[in-house]
Length: 308
Image 1 (tube, rainbow, N blue to C red):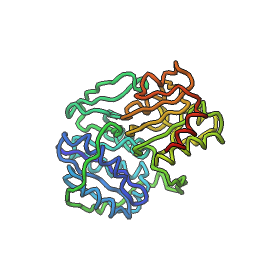
Image 2 (cartoon, rainbow, N blue to C red; image 1 turned 45 degrees about the vertical axis):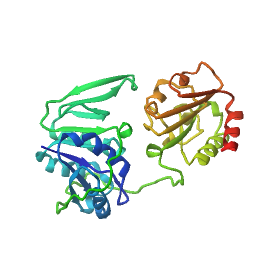
Image 3 (tube, helix red, strand yellow; image 1 turned 30 degrees about the horizontal axis):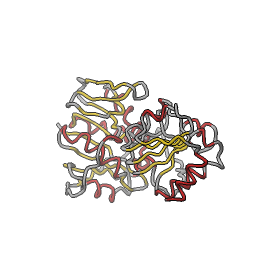
């Protein structure tokens, strides 16, 4: 049997990082067919066809599938699911909206945030804020699951899979798209950035958070924040890293003024190299850091930024 991978598409552009890493996760389960849904997704379908490991791309170009509305896209997937043993997607907000509905319509178990594929029926996922790994075995005829992509390498380009166009029209009118409100930034996207600089409660204020942004800009990094910093109004919600925020695994993660609560560690502990700056020598963040600097961040960060 084959695997159906729902592609994450925004504005007609393929989210290559998410799709290619999810592809790596499931490539051992059989032929992988990528589903691109939505009018104007021709370029995304063509790009998906170049990923190594993709056997076929299915392009459903009806306007009703745009913006990945859960109802029509779930109906589309269900109509295709009979030919697949697995229906998967990267663990994005769109996938978390669509795939639980797919699982309910198919009357099967929803397996979320998979971080390891043991075999076709057995998967690993984190529980208890990442402090334990749960092994899940499913006997459902179709396994529906989201993939936490942070721990997987991206599949390389260089393939040339065929693109099959579907004439299926979206039938559900249960929801409609109104508008997108997207914050524009010249910085890398947080979940796919190679370097992330995050600030915590210790930064002290929204105005002082500028020193975190200055360091990030010097490094060409994305900016993150702990929940404490977000709840205090120092940083916007979409910067939050942690169990209730975004999960990142960059090559370099710099934690500034972050104590290291387990909820935050759940979102960044898979980073390749972790650097912590905190004046509290007993802060839990130092237990996971590769490099730790016990110092006042208001002295250390400007000095580091100046040297860079």
